[in-house]
Length: 269
Image (cartoon, rainbow, N blue to C red; front, side, top):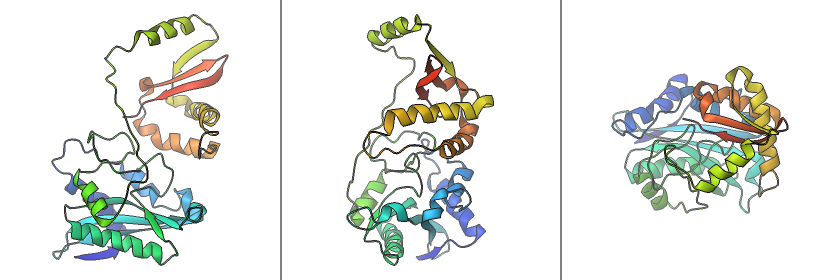
């Protein structure tokens, strides 16, 4: 096996294309949009390059075929806020081979250590936590937009190397055809009669307006909780522009009280 840093456009393309072959035959795998992956590693697109650094690696077998990939990165603003200076790894993909996985993890760890890091989180994103974050350990359903997907054996690869659970995140699904509890319908009926409330779908033709309404609701709801931080207008506008190709207008709702945004329900394919 031979591992090398991604330094050419051809290698960057191989980094993106490898999962297509790895997941061939897996009906639950949905290929991410190429532009979304490329944006993570483009200093012009990813603001985290302003206060961080990132690299990618490809692992090939003795015949030159790609059998694994990984990215390693440092967010200088966060790295030294931990009890140990901590970097990250992500975009990990690998055949079912512990030796191959170990070589990928070792390479990422060595790159981080050479830059002063003492710990490595993964799999995480070189960017916001709303995308490419975490390892699936049960419930291998088709992933939502910008969410990680992986085969069950990845847990073995990570834990055998020495990764430990830092926190767990639970995600739930709901069949939209199923009837909810009656209390929801009763509450809806009462609010519907109040003319101060109105609900409407997002319209792509007014995307900037709905992005700002999203920011208003999010900041009021989350900034005061835990490590929540206020979203900036530029950040949210950029997110909505990137999300536009996959937006289904009828799957997104906004609620207004006296014309002020107070709630939202965002579904993405």
